[in-house]
Image (cartoon, rainbow, N blue to C red; front, side, top):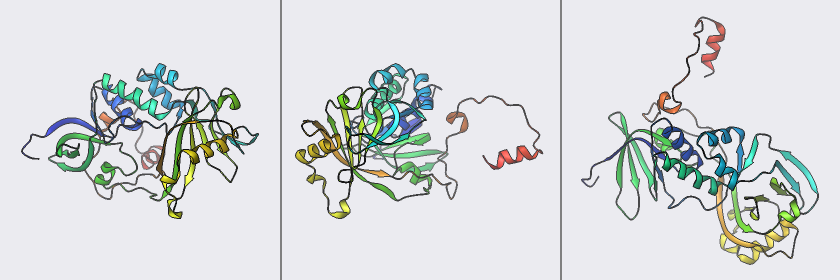
Length: 319
């Protein structure tokens, strides 16, 4: 600790993605404005996910952020349209009935971060949670924020929203049911007026059925910003450096089916897409739980049931 005093907070949230910011907004609304740590230096700059469900929009409305999400988002058909190319005829349609709106994740994070700060949460970018252990009924968190020294934060509660390789989950001894990776992919962010060929509203995602190109094209705003996503196979010797401007342009043109377009490429990157897995119960108890009154807020009182009834016993076994 280098002789420095520990910083003390009531709630520490690891991760300032949509999940961490959502937790911060819910806590702030209950008078528990947390400290949020995020290892990135700024909010995300890549659209990544775009779909929002009805339940998510209800939460966003409760936080007062719905007008901004609707302004920066866009209306779309809640389906994946599979085609040989973007301008080709539709081969198959896969519905996404739970989704009601689209807003790119980089826009959403910016909106929620501003709302969380306004509600009283502290956001600390460039700070990564590197260690966590219990101490005297609380949690001691070790935080790295280069170029400064390691610091220590003492918190009553810690929320893990720090991704698939969560430091919080590992410290709590919570395993996942599936650990294998879903795959690797190249995600190319570009601008091009392709709405002229898709109609309005566009589909939420376009699956490219041509086996020579494959992947997807995803609209990420209401005008001309798109993602071209394709599988990437580093195990076969493929390198990220092989995807230069010329190759990325060719991949966009082949998927769009418009060879004379000149897309403006903003960003390309390789990213790992972990296969979602359900957390398992910890093998032993750790002091990394959020009390229900903090997690869920005040709960309504329900009429008492006869604890001897079979229905009541079944209810408790399935909780």
